Image 1 (cartoon, protein in one colour):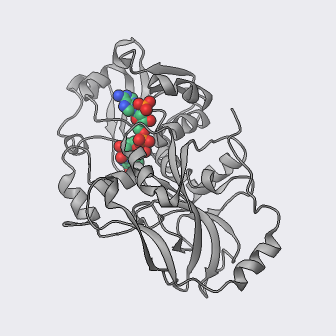
Image 2 (cartoon, rainbow, N blue to C red):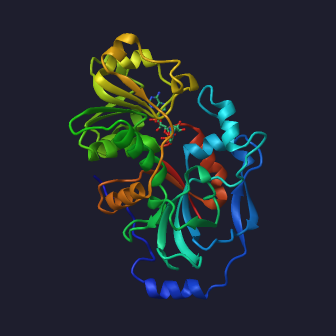
Image 3 (cartoon, rainbow, N blue to C red):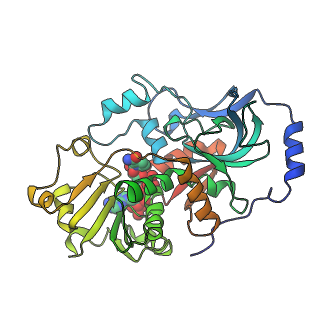
Length: 355
Ligand SMILES: NC(=O)c1ccc[n+]([C@@H]2O[C@H](COP(=O)([O-])OP(=O)(O)OC[C@H]3O[C@@H](n4cnc5c(N)ncnc54)[C@H](OP(=O)(O)O)[C@@H]3O)[C@@H](O)[C@H]2O)c1
């Protein structure tokens, strides 16, 4: 696998950096990308807002890079899978967004600590996953020391570690925890070149599975390079008509026809819907009786992340066993362009903004 990791300019000079950070006056204002109504990328604008106050158990992170994810696109535009409209408004805000700053994940450095913080010190470089709590599209964010936060390996860049958590934890949770993928099982990843899919190809291999990735022509090489044993170009072939069967199918693309996909599942196979409609989520749109009798089942829901998942992903990435794929790094001032790239539905891996 190609090494995609640039070195950090800060590595190896911790003492002088810590002293420098400690000596700086604490910031009171910061730039943040905010939005006050749901809509296209143009609803996001950069504003000056107060720097969050830290509580006793929190650290203040100076954010160096953050991803703009499909989660940010959905929260910004309220473009949700079929049937999830009302639920989406309940989560994100009925009449307008409840949380004005998007951004699920970040990398950066600790510049202040609350009085009860024991796990981090000023100067630590960290990776943090805010998930649905959001708030990473800003210059600073307060973070609970016991939350989804870990130290950044020194050999990984801020950009790469800001692309680790969203796709990586989703892939881990769906493949390892929910689908219980076993060594030697055949796993099909639909949407293998996106944030979740590119991570899922690698996590599938890490779990010992035989992985087939489905993507468009331009992404065949990268999906192969990430470790997929086989690749299928969806612009040329229909995966449901190739006569191949799988133990696990992970769908990271649009809503799929369940009856069609159950035919390419082995007995006891799992159709894992990272993305599905409300009808599929509540079991209204389900597999045929014959498929269910053969032990085939649907797994859906929302991914959950644990701190040890971020630690595992960071460890794998530091040891070149996991590559967070980055399509483009935008300056923070161009965050609207980053949102537009994500909204295309065809990004390769992750889109990053650099502060
Ligand atoms: N359930 C959860 O907890 C959870 C968590 C995270 C994400 N999600 C959802 O999962 C979905 C994927 O997220 P993501 O961040 O990976 O999105 P993404 O980065 O935008 O990736 C989507 C991928 O789908 C591929 N694609 C588009 N049309 C396709 C087709 N007809 N057949 C196969 N692949 C196709 C694209 O590849 P090409 O460019 O090659 O077409 C693209 O790489 C999103 O809808 C997101 O909302 C759900």
